[in-house]
Image (cartoon, rainbow over all chains, first blue to last red; front, top):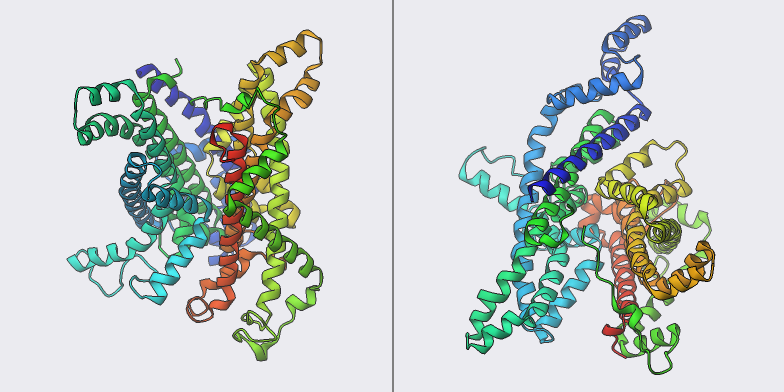
Length: 322
Length: 302
């Protein structure tokens, strides 16, 4: 077990290195560097001083030296400065990171709250009308693109029915830290997270349904039934327990999916998180911020996949690669 | 990674004369009325869009008519006009044509790359397989959407062709992995061993013996991919990183809804495009599901 986890962690290192090199080279291809912001703020800077500054900042060094310095700073938590806003990137990220994290967490919670009961019902009563409805929902949620669905949700519940706010993460006039503030925050979060959650249940429902149907035919279930265990108990004690465990393994993949979707969700609901920062940074050509964000999302995706692989290997020892 | 179970494809009806692939698909569609209806509706949309768009010149889309800003649907402008007084219906048709064409192009390119690499990796195994799989594993962990957006903004002289190539560069991996796992299973069967004994060159075994046996999986996968690609392209265009200026996509029309006034009061600008995407995606997926059942003898209805 430990061997597998260590192996899997070791594979992560070259992946991250490769990712960082690609991102760094992309960054070099992007227009603008650390001095662009200063040049805009201070247009009288003469070319000679500029050149001196470049030399001092090491912008004229060969790319691998710059890369090593960049990665060194990154590891120490120094993300550099935003070329456009001329502020530290870490300051720019702070709040938004918390917002995206909150949105992701709530999406995950809603997704599991919807998926697990539906998967269990569909698996327990296959071919009933409830099952047909759930399979239908699963099918439609697989087919609809996230941004179209989120937009329709916003139009229906945000604009037409006025049940939810149509943008932002919290009302401006509410004082920070009060009870109302938290409520307003939740109110802003519900629509985006439910929209995302409704479309991220496909894998879990499908898996649970087929797993429960398969488990029903296993010998231990027949034995339990033969010795007279009540139907209810057969399900709760024997079948669900076995089928629910592997669902935990989807956690990592779900995180990756939700992260990818956050770009759309945050843009549509005008929610100030990392995804929205990414879109606005790239529109303003603020490439130092873009870099850090791609790196961050890449890191989180790799971490998410790793998480799923590890959970899966604990739950299902057959897939361990020793 | 768990190797997906070999599906029952190789166990097709053995004792009676086995029906041809097309007749199985036809029978499945006749049984599944929803899929049949979807297929007809989808082709109707496609034919209508392609034929009608031939009559629309670029000036008919770009013609700005400021007197007619945001006019609601009427007999001249079937779906009203947008912020520049341009006809929404014409934009919808041309946008649908562009989105469809691009999605088809991406599906074909990614299939070509994915099938070739998947076949090679699965058939030969060993070092080649290892190298290809490491590349695939790496691309799978990338934040694909973000990197595509970065490329789109970086490429100088960005045009439709560039966009198709950028998308294709990232979306072949899933298909390659699928084809590889199926080829791995196929490779172990007797007919491949027999062909090898007869001295058939590997290239011939791969192309004329293994590939036809995978064709049903490939068709199903391509159908579902087509829907996925329409979704990704329109999504990117919605964000403003899809088709270049002057090439309308369904996503472009939907992106007008980012203006709250348009979103709330001028729904004729963006809602038809959103609904058209929904209808097309559902149609393609219904057909895809029917094909999937036809490809797997255990699931067939007919």
